[in-house]
Amino acid sequence: MTQMIDAKNNIITEEMKYVAKREGMDPDKIRKLVSKGYVVIPKNIHRATTPVGIGDNLRTKINVNIGTSPDCVDIEMEIRKTKIANKYGADAIMDLSTGGDLSEIRKKIMENTDLPIGTVPIYEIGVISKEKYGSIIDMDEDIIFNTIEKQAKEGVDFMTLHCGITKSSVDSLKKEDRIMGIVSRGGSFLAAYIVHHNRENPLYSQFDYLLEILKEHDVTLSLGDGMRPGCLWDNTDRPQIQELIILGELVDRCRETGVQVMVEGPGHVPLNNIEANMRIQKSICKNAPFYVLGPIVTDMAPGYDHITSAIGGAIAGYAGANFLCYVTPAEHVRLMNEEDVKEGIIAAKIAAQAADVAKGNKIAWEMEKEMAIARKNHLWDKQFQLAFDKEKPKRMREELPSSNEKACSVCGDLCALLV
Image (cartoon, rainbow, N blue to C red):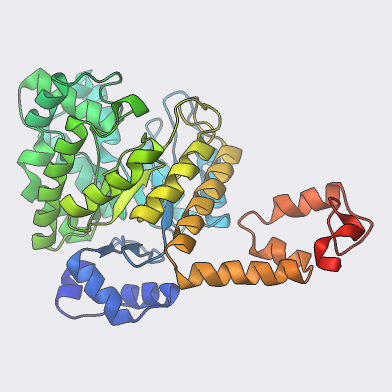
């Protein structure tokens, strides 16, 4: 039984009650939103996860990507990243590991957090296929579905699966004048499989079988955007929109089956096209929760993409995105370290808060009011307590203190609030 099936049967689950309390909403309203597919609660039946609601009428949530690479396999570092995600208020974690013992890495991450855990199973499928056949594109259907089922049994709460990469969408891409082609790693694996074998994507051709697996374990399907643009120049083109139309059709099939589903969105979008992208997705996918990477609003700032993505994320959240995937300063440059993870989380939380304030969310506004009162009354410890990063502002104040203990060292006795 899934959260969605329970909701359709007028059952308010404990998870729905928990989400309702966190959001300051009536539990039956949460149930109705889940039953319609406007809200998902990623919660595998095999794992004790703290429930998180993602979707319309709720606060904007943020996800943190971590994971090893073939060049850097350090499980202890991934555990430290997990603890940073816990500490600084992430809502979910995705393990994108591609190096080392992938099952063991997932296990260690899950042991160190109660946040919902997501994966991209095609990564492990690619690793297994390369080890077995010497090539990723020689993956077979048994490896694909066995890996997905194995991860579901391990307790993964949501999975990114590129079901919209089809023969028709790959053909469409060939006709498009893109600079960067496919930048989605999982999308590129499946596109190469389709071209090499002249065969349909098994995740699309056997979508009903996939839904059976996900339904059994109540794994939320995150429909990956394999045709997403990898640079501003390629944004909002025909391959991207064609794939989105396919994903919209698959959303309907998920809802009919009772499988929770959200849709992933583009990562590189200029400011003037963000709102349109959000509206198109919400229309085509019938208000399915929208999960976006960034979006990054300029490609000119490697090393600072946590900032470029926070700008885009705030606009996207205000325009309808429900789930922001953080971007770290290391994006496009190297594997993120612990400090990158922290910086990415804070930037994403700023974006989510800005979006929620703009949408009039009551909890977000109460947070702003509490901070304003603390500033008005020079309650420095309270300000630090309320801040997304509690250590940095305290450290900065201590580095250059004011002679007036109430003020900061910019104004001192000339502080406007002391006049």
